[in-house]
Image (cartoon, rainbow, N blue to C red; front, side, top):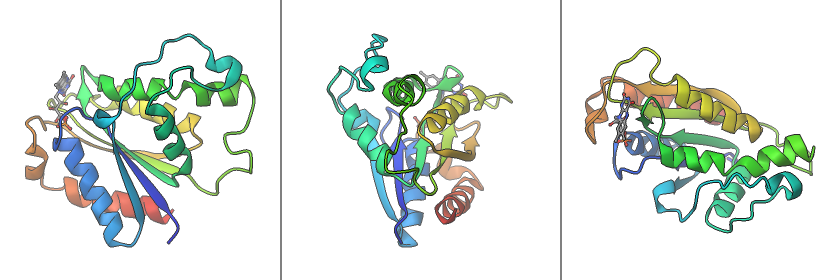
Length: 194
Ligand SMILES: Cc1cc2nc3c(=O)[nH]c(=O)nc-3n(C[C@H](O)[C@H](O)[C@H](O)COP(=O)(O)O)c2cc1C
């Protein structure tokens, strides 16, 4: 099978709830023979976007750090799974900083009017969002989902939905959830088969 799935772990907490969901997702896919890759942003050396707008002239960022590697992997992937917790009702800051650093792709497409894939669009790029938050506010995942949707839109990735889990706070609490892991399994297998 040639479908390659990239998982991005956005939480600063190792082995936390969103890490567990993502690792389960990737193991499920590996067991079905898919090629997978995991990037933990807490292990990357990167700085936030400077807002200098240099990328609107060149399509490239002036900062040379691990974001270049992540950008390359995001272009190579057929499927993307972003897993990140809710902090202050939005996506956690570390993940948001990474998303902001994708501004060169936005500049490339919408300012410089160049295609993301000069050799022609990839057949099918799809992505989902996995998340957890400590409260059960009705709109808990709305703001974070919006950032992920926007990231995917800029990267020519079709957004295929969120598996978000409320009232999940302590590290590992997701393990007690009655349906989360089964739902994630079903979601990622459907994602891979698209
Ligand atoms: C700085 C910070 C801010 C948080 N803000 C919220 C919040 O606004 N709403 C919420 O429901 N949970 C909030 N939480 C709880 C986390 O979303 C929750 O613990 C989640 O399970 C963490 O996932 P992780 O283990 O993958 O990091 C916050 C946690 C931290 C550390």
